[in-house]
Image (cartoon, rainbow, N blue to C red; front, side):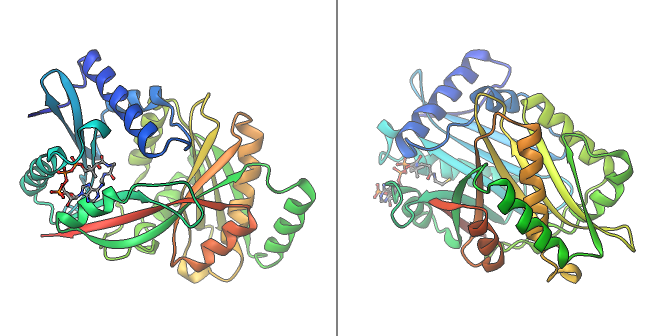
Length: 337
Ligand SMILES: CC(C)(COP(=O)(O)OP(=O)(O)OC[C@H]1O[C@@H](n2cnc3c(N)ncnc32)[C@H](O)[C@@H]1OP(=O)(O)O)[C@@H](O)C(=O)NCCC(=O)NCCS
Protein backbone atom coordinates (compact mmCIF):
# COMPACT_ATOMS: atom_id res chain seq x y z
CA UNK A 1 0.00 0.00 0.00
CA UNK A 2 1.12 3.54 -0.76
CA UNK A 3 -0.09 6.77 0.84
CA UNK A 4 0.18 9.93 -1.28
CA UNK A 5 -1.19 13.48 -1.03
CA UNK A 6 -4.49 13.91 -2.87
CA UNK A 7 -3.48 15.89 -5.95
CA UNK A 8 -6.34 18.37 -6.27
CA UNK A 9 -5.13 19.60 -9.66
CA UNK A 10 -5.53 16.07 -11.11
CA UNK A 11 -9.16 15.69 -12.30
CA UNK A 12 -9.02 11.89 -12.36
CA UNK A 13 -7.72 11.76 -8.76
CA UNK A 14 -10.67 13.93 -7.75
CA UNK A 15 -13.07 11.64 -9.67
CA UNK A 16 -11.59 8.67 -7.80
CA UNK A 17 -11.89 10.45 -4.48
CA UNK A 18 -15.55 11.40 -5.02
CA UNK A 19 -16.35 7.88 -6.26
CA UNK A 20 -14.79 6.43 -3.09
CA UNK A 21 -16.78 8.84 -0.89
CA UNK A 22 -19.98 7.74 -2.64
CA UNK A 23 -19.22 4.03 -2.13
CA UNK A 24 -18.52 4.61 1.58
CA UNK A 25 -21.70 6.68 1.98
CA UNK A 26 -23.84 3.99 0.30
CA UNK A 27 -22.36 1.35 2.61
CA UNK A 28 -22.38 3.20 5.94
CA UNK A 29 -25.46 5.47 5.68
CA UNK A 30 -27.43 4.02 2.75
CA UNK A 31 -30.73 5.80 3.44
CA UNK A 32 -29.18 9.10 4.63
CA UNK A 33 -29.35 12.44 2.86
CA UNK A 34 -26.83 12.55 0.02
CA UNK A 35 -24.54 15.58 -0.04
CA UNK A 36 -24.09 17.63 -3.16
CA UNK A 37 -21.03 15.90 -4.63
CA UNK A 38 -20.25 18.77 -7.00
CA UNK A 39 -20.02 21.10 -3.99
CA UNK A 40 -17.71 18.67 -2.24
CA UNK A 41 -15.56 18.52 -5.36
CA UNK A 42 -15.46 22.32 -5.58
CA UNK A 43 -14.47 22.56 -1.91
CA UNK A 44 -11.43 20.36 -2.60
CA UNK A 45 -9.98 22.91 -5.00
CA UNK A 46 -10.87 26.00 -2.97
CA UNK A 47 -8.07 27.37 -0.83
CA UNK A 48 -9.03 28.73 2.58
CA UNK A 49 -6.13 30.80 3.99
CA UNK A 50 -7.62 30.52 7.50
CA UNK A 51 -7.65 26.71 7.55
CA UNK A 52 -4.78 24.39 6.61
CA UNK A 53 -6.16 21.18 5.13
CA UNK A 54 -4.13 18.04 4.52
CA UNK A 55 -5.67 15.17 2.53
CA UNK A 56 -3.82 11.97 1.78
CA UNK A 57 -5.07 8.86 0.01
CA UNK A 58 -4.15 5.17 0.29
CA UNK A 59 -3.61 3.18 -2.89
CA UNK A 60 -3.53 -0.56 -3.47
CA UNK A 61 -2.11 -0.71 -6.99
CA UNK A 62 -4.39 1.54 -9.05
CA UNK A 63 -7.28 1.41 -6.56
CA UNK A 64 -7.89 4.22 -4.08
CA UNK A 65 -8.79 2.28 -0.94
CA UNK A 66 -8.98 4.96 1.74
CA UNK A 67 -8.02 8.44 2.81
CA UNK A 68 -7.58 10.83 5.70
CA UNK A 69 -8.32 14.51 6.03
CA UNK A 70 -6.87 16.79 8.71
CA UNK A 71 -8.00 20.36 9.32
CA UNK A 72 -5.77 22.76 11.23
CA UNK A 73 -6.99 26.20 12.28
CA UNK A 74 -4.31 28.72 11.37
CA UNK A 75 -4.97 31.69 13.67
CA UNK A 76 -6.11 30.03 16.90
CA UNK A 77 -6.27 26.57 18.46
CA UNK A 78 -2.86 25.63 17.20
CA UNK A 79 -2.91 22.67 19.62
CA UNK A 80 -5.94 21.18 17.88
CA UNK A 81 -6.80 19.12 14.75
CA UNK A 82 -10.13 17.94 13.33
CA UNK A 83 -9.58 14.71 11.42
CA UNK A 84 -11.37 11.93 9.59
CA UNK A 85 -10.29 8.54 8.19
CA UNK A 86 -12.33 6.38 5.83
CA UNK A 87 -11.59 3.05 4.18
CA UNK A 88 -13.34 1.40 1.20
CA UNK A 89 -15.84 -1.14 2.62
CA UNK A 90 -14.23 -4.05 0.70
CA UNK A 91 -10.80 -3.30 2.18
CA UNK A 92 -11.71 -2.99 5.86
CA UNK A 93 -10.17 -5.05 8.71
CA UNK A 94 -6.93 -5.44 6.75
CA UNK A 95 -4.93 -2.72 8.47
CA UNK A 96 -5.40 0.10 5.92
CA UNK A 97 -7.16 2.31 8.47
CA UNK A 98 -4.35 1.77 10.99
CA UNK A 99 -1.66 2.67 8.47
CA UNK A 100 -3.57 5.82 7.52
CA UNK A 101 -3.89 6.64 11.24
CA UNK A 102 -0.11 6.27 11.79
CA UNK A 103 0.57 8.66 8.91
CA UNK A 104 -2.15 11.07 10.09
CA UNK A 105 -0.64 11.20 13.59
CA UNK A 106 2.78 11.95 12.05
CA UNK A 107 1.26 14.86 10.12
CA UNK A 108 -0.42 16.15 13.30
CA UNK A 109 2.89 15.90 15.19
CA UNK A 110 4.70 17.89 12.50
CA UNK A 111 1.99 20.57 12.85
CA UNK A 112 2.44 20.53 16.65
CA UNK A 113 -1.16 19.41 17.26
CA UNK A 114 -1.65 17.64 20.58
CA UNK A 115 -5.47 17.42 20.72
CA UNK A 116 -6.99 15.43 17.87
CA UNK A 117 -10.76 15.18 17.38
CA UNK A 118 -12.60 12.68 15.17
CA UNK A 119 -16.27 11.85 14.61
CA UNK A 120 -18.09 8.67 13.73
CA UNK A 121 -21.72 7.64 13.39
CA UNK A 122 -23.54 5.21 15.68
CA UNK A 123 -27.05 3.78 15.76
CA UNK A 124 -29.74 5.86 17.45
CA UNK A 125 -32.43 4.07 19.46
CA UNK A 126 -34.92 2.76 16.89
CA UNK A 127 -32.82 4.23 14.07
CA UNK A 128 -31.33 2.49 11.02
CA UNK A 129 -28.34 0.17 11.44
CA UNK A 130 -24.94 1.79 11.90
CA UNK A 131 -21.66 -0.10 12.21
CA UNK A 132 -19.84 0.04 15.55
CA UNK A 133 -16.57 -0.09 13.57
CA UNK A 134 -15.67 3.62 13.68
CA UNK A 135 -15.83 3.81 17.48
CA UNK A 136 -14.00 0.48 17.91
CA UNK A 137 -11.28 1.64 15.51
CA UNK A 138 -10.78 4.98 17.27
CA UNK A 139 -10.72 3.28 20.70
CA UNK A 140 -8.14 0.79 19.40
CA UNK A 141 -5.97 3.81 18.54
CA UNK A 142 -6.21 5.36 22.00
CA UNK A 143 -9.04 7.87 21.37
CA UNK A 144 -11.69 8.30 24.07
CA UNK A 145 -15.36 9.17 23.68
CA UNK A 146 -15.73 12.88 24.39
CA UNK A 147 -19.35 13.70 23.54
CA UNK A 148 -22.43 11.95 22.16
CA UNK A 149 -24.66 13.92 19.82
CA UNK A 150 -28.07 13.35 18.24
CA UNK A 151 -28.10 13.84 14.48
CA UNK A 152 -31.69 14.96 13.87
CA UNK A 153 -33.86 15.90 10.91
CA UNK A 154 -37.10 17.89 10.61
CA UNK A 155 -39.31 18.70 7.62
CA UNK A 156 -38.91 22.41 6.87
CA UNK A 157 -42.71 22.85 6.95
CA UNK A 158 -43.21 20.98 10.23
CA UNK A 159 -44.89 24.06 11.79
CA UNK A 160 -47.99 25.37 10.05
CA UNK A 161 -48.28 29.17 9.69
CA UNK A 162 -50.53 29.71 12.71
CA UNK A 163 -48.38 27.55 15.04
CA UNK A 164 -45.27 29.38 13.81
CA UNK A 165 -46.94 32.75 14.51
CA UNK A 166 -48.08 31.69 17.98
CA UNK A 167 -44.63 30.37 18.97
CA UNK A 168 -42.82 33.41 17.58
CA UNK A 169 -45.16 35.93 19.24
CA UNK A 170 -44.84 34.05 22.53
CA UNK A 171 -41.03 33.90 22.29
CA UNK A 172 -40.75 37.61 21.44
CA UNK A 173 -42.96 38.54 24.41
CA UNK A 174 -39.99 37.43 26.58
CA UNK A 175 -37.55 39.38 24.38
CA UNK A 176 -38.86 42.93 24.23
CA UNK A 177 -35.36 44.40 24.58
CA UNK A 178 -34.21 42.60 21.44
CA UNK A 179 -34.95 42.59 17.74
CA UNK A 180 -34.35 39.70 15.34
CA UNK A 181 -32.58 40.34 12.02
CA UNK A 182 -32.09 37.88 9.15
CA UNK A 183 -30.08 37.80 5.95
CA UNK A 184 -29.10 35.50 3.11
CA UNK A 185 -25.51 34.81 1.95
CA UNK A 186 -23.87 38.23 2.42
CA UNK A 187 -23.59 39.78 5.87
CA UNK A 188 -24.91 43.36 5.66
CA UNK A 189 -22.06 45.89 5.86
CA UNK A 190 -23.62 47.64 8.85
CA UNK A 191 -23.67 44.40 10.88
CA UNK A 192 -20.38 42.78 9.97
CA UNK A 193 -18.23 44.23 12.77
CA UNK A 194 -20.80 43.32 15.44
CA UNK A 195 -21.23 39.86 13.86
CA UNK A 196 -17.45 39.30 13.95
CA UNK A 197 -17.47 40.16 17.69
CA UNK A 198 -20.33 37.72 18.26
CA UNK A 199 -18.66 34.92 16.27
CA UNK A 200 -15.51 35.50 18.32
CA UNK A 201 -17.40 34.32 21.43
CA UNK A 202 -19.00 31.23 19.87
CA UNK A 203 -16.63 28.30 20.39
CA UNK A 204 -16.32 28.70 24.15
CA UNK A 205 -20.14 28.56 24.42
CA UNK A 206 -20.46 25.13 22.76
CA UNK A 207 -20.67 21.91 24.79
CA UNK A 208 -17.47 20.26 23.55
CA UNK A 209 -17.05 17.38 25.98
CA UNK A 210 -13.35 16.88 26.73
CA UNK A 211 -12.21 19.05 23.83
CA UNK A 212 -10.68 22.38 24.80
CA UNK A 213 -10.88 25.18 22.26
CA UNK A 214 -10.21 28.88 22.46
CA UNK A 215 -12.51 31.26 20.60
CA UNK A 216 -12.09 32.17 16.95
CA UNK A 217 -10.36 35.47 16.32
CA UNK A 218 -12.94 36.52 13.78
CA UNK A 219 -12.89 39.78 11.88
CA UNK A 220 -14.73 41.27 8.91
CA UNK A 221 -12.15 40.25 6.21
CA UNK A 222 -12.18 36.65 7.49
CA UNK A 223 -16.00 36.56 7.37
CA UNK A 224 -15.91 37.87 3.80
CA UNK A 225 -13.39 35.16 2.86
CA UNK A 226 -15.76 32.53 4.27
CA UNK A 227 -18.53 33.95 2.10
CA UNK A 228 -16.28 33.58 -0.96
CA UNK A 229 -15.53 29.96 -0.12
CA UNK A 230 -19.22 29.15 0.24
CA UNK A 231 -19.94 30.85 -3.06
CA UNK A 232 -17.23 28.74 -4.75
CA UNK A 233 -18.91 25.58 -3.37
CA UNK A 234 -22.30 26.75 -4.58
CA UNK A 235 -23.81 26.58 -1.09
CA UNK A 236 -25.95 29.25 0.51
CA UNK A 237 -26.30 30.66 3.99
CA UNK A 238 -29.38 31.78 5.84
CA UNK A 239 -28.60 33.63 9.07
CA UNK A 240 -30.67 35.09 11.90
CA UNK A 241 -29.36 37.05 14.87
CA UNK A 242 -30.81 38.89 17.87
CA UNK A 243 -29.71 42.47 18.51
CA UNK A 244 -29.89 44.08 21.94
CA UNK A 245 -31.79 47.32 21.31
CA UNK A 246 -29.94 49.44 23.90
CA UNK A 247 -26.32 48.46 23.24
CA UNK A 248 -26.75 47.58 19.55
CA UNK A 249 -24.68 44.43 20.16
CA UNK A 250 -25.58 41.13 18.49
CA UNK A 251 -26.18 38.58 21.24
CA UNK A 252 -27.65 35.41 19.68
CA UNK A 253 -27.19 33.64 16.37
CA UNK A 254 -28.20 30.66 14.26
CA UNK A 255 -27.10 29.64 10.77
CA UNK A 256 -28.38 27.35 8.03
CA UNK A 257 -25.78 26.07 5.62
CA UNK A 258 -27.91 25.46 2.52
CA UNK A 259 -26.74 22.73 0.15
CA UNK A 260 -26.96 23.53 -3.55
CA UNK A 261 -29.85 21.94 -5.47
CA UNK A 262 -30.72 19.18 -6.17
CA UNK A 263 -29.88 18.41 -2.50
CA UNK A 264 -33.05 19.58 -0.74
CA UNK A 265 -31.40 20.05 2.58
CA UNK A 266 -30.04 22.73 4.93
CA UNK A 267 -27.92 22.02 8.02
CA UNK A 268 -27.93 24.12 11.15
CA UNK A 269 -24.49 25.38 12.08
CA UNK A 270 -23.85 26.86 15.51
CA UNK A 271 -26.81 28.28 17.46
CA UNK A 272 -25.95 30.22 20.59
CA UNK A 273 -27.09 32.93 22.97
CA UNK A 274 -24.59 35.05 24.91
CA UNK A 275 -24.55 34.16 28.63
CA UNK A 276 -25.83 37.59 29.79
CA UNK A 277 -28.81 37.36 27.44
CA UNK A 278 -30.17 33.93 28.26
CA UNK A 279 -33.69 33.37 29.63
CA UNK A 280 -35.41 35.54 26.97
CA UNK A 281 -36.33 32.72 24.52
CA UNK A 282 -33.81 34.13 22.05
CA UNK A 283 -32.63 30.66 20.98
CA UNK A 284 -36.17 29.73 19.92
CA UNK A 285 -36.82 33.17 18.38
CA UNK A 286 -33.75 33.13 16.09
CA UNK A 287 -34.40 29.53 15.05
CA UNK A 288 -38.04 30.27 14.18
CA UNK A 289 -37.04 33.40 12.25
CA UNK A 290 -34.35 31.53 10.36
CA UNK A 291 -36.72 28.73 9.38
CA UNK A 292 -39.19 31.27 7.95
CA UNK A 293 -36.37 33.03 6.11
CA UNK A 294 -35.14 29.70 4.72
CA UNK A 295 -38.57 28.85 3.36
CA UNK A 296 -38.86 32.25 1.69
CA UNK A 297 -35.42 32.28 0.07
CA UNK A 298 -34.58 28.61 -0.57
CA UNK A 299 -37.78 26.89 -1.73
CA UNK A 300 -35.84 23.80 -2.91
CA UNK A 301 -35.12 22.85 0.73
CA UNK A 302 -37.48 20.23 2.17
CA UNK A 303 -35.55 19.08 5.26
CA UNK A 304 -33.34 20.57 7.95
CA UNK A 305 -30.57 18.68 9.76
CA UNK A 306 -28.89 19.41 13.08
CA UNK A 307 -26.46 17.76 15.48
CA UNK A 308 -26.73 18.47 19.20
CA UNK A 309 -25.01 17.14 22.28
CA UNK A 310 -27.15 14.84 24.44
CA UNK A 311 -26.22 17.11 27.34
CA UNK A 312 -27.54 20.29 25.66
CA UNK A 313 -30.98 20.13 27.29
CA UNK A 314 -32.20 23.62 26.28
CA UNK A 315 -31.33 23.19 22.62
CA UNK A 316 -32.84 19.71 22.54
CA UNK A 317 -36.10 21.09 24.00
CA UNK A 318 -36.19 23.79 21.28
CA UNK A 319 -35.49 21.22 18.59
CA UNK A 320 -38.35 18.99 19.73
CA UNK A 321 -40.74 21.97 19.36
CA UNK A 322 -39.46 22.43 15.80
CA UNK A 323 -40.18 18.80 14.88
CA UNK A 324 -36.67 17.31 14.94
CA UNK A 325 -36.38 13.56 15.43
CA UNK A 326 -33.09 11.65 15.85
CA UNK A 327 -31.87 9.60 12.88
CA UNK A 328 -28.47 8.52 14.15
CA UNK A 329 -25.87 9.42 16.76
CA UNK A 330 -22.63 11.23 16.15
CA UNK A 331 -19.85 10.23 18.53
CA UNK A 332 -17.05 12.69 19.06
CA UNK A 333 -13.71 11.14 20.04
CA UNK A 334 -10.53 12.83 21.20
CA UNK A 335 -6.87 11.83 21.48
CA UNK A 336 -4.50 13.91 23.61
CA UNK A 337 -0.77 13.39 23.20
C1 LIG B 1 -13.15 2.89 10.93
C2 LIG B 1 -12.41 2.49 9.65
C3 LIG B 1 -11.59 3.67 9.15
C4 LIG B 1 -11.47 1.32 10.00
O1 LIG B 1 -10.68 1.00 8.86
P1 LIG B 1 -9.97 -0.44 8.75
O2 LIG B 1 -9.05 -0.41 7.59
O3 LIG B 1 -11.02 -1.50 8.77
O4 LIG B 1 -9.15 -0.47 10.11
P2 LIG B 1 -8.08 -1.55 10.58
O5 LIG B 1 -8.17 -2.80 9.74
O6 LIG B 1 -6.75 -0.89 10.61
O7 LIG B 1 -8.57 -1.88 12.07
C5 LIG B 1 -7.76 -1.63 13.20
C6 LIG B 1 -8.50 -2.08 14.46
O8 LIG B 1 -9.65 -1.27 14.68
C7 LIG B 1 -10.71 -2.06 15.28
N1 LIG B 1 -11.82 -2.17 14.34
C8 LIG B 1 -11.89 -1.69 13.07
N2 LIG B 1 -13.11 -1.96 12.53
C9 LIG B 1 -13.81 -2.64 13.46
C10 LIG B 1 -15.11 -3.22 13.50
N3 LIG B 1 -15.94 -3.14 12.44
N4 LIG B 1 -15.50 -3.83 14.62
C11 LIG B 1 -14.70 -3.93 15.69
N5 LIG B 1 -13.43 -3.43 15.72
C12 LIG B 1 -13.00 -2.79 14.63
C13 LIG B 1 -10.09 -3.44 15.53
O9 LIG B 1 -9.47 -3.39 16.80
C14 LIG B 1 -9.04 -3.48 14.41
O10 LIG B 1 -8.00 -4.39 14.70
P3 LIG B 1 -8.22 -5.96 14.29
O11 LIG B 1 -8.76 -6.02 12.89
O12 LIG B 1 -6.83 -6.52 14.42
O13 LIG B 1 -9.20 -6.52 15.28
C15 LIG B 1 -13.43 2.02 8.57
O14 LIG B 1 -14.29 1.04 9.14
C16 LIG B 1 -14.31 3.12 8.03
O15 LIG B 1 -13.95 3.74 7.03
N6 LIG B 1 -15.45 3.40 8.69
C17 LIG B 1 -16.33 4.54 8.33
C18 LIG B 1 -15.72 5.90 8.73
C19 LIG B 1 -15.33 6.00 10.20
O16 LIG B 1 -16.11 5.69 11.09
N7 LIG B 1 -14.09 6.46 10.44
C20 LIG B 1 -13.52 6.57 11.78
C21 LIG B 1 -13.66 7.90 12.40
S1 LIG B 1 -13.04 9.26 11.51
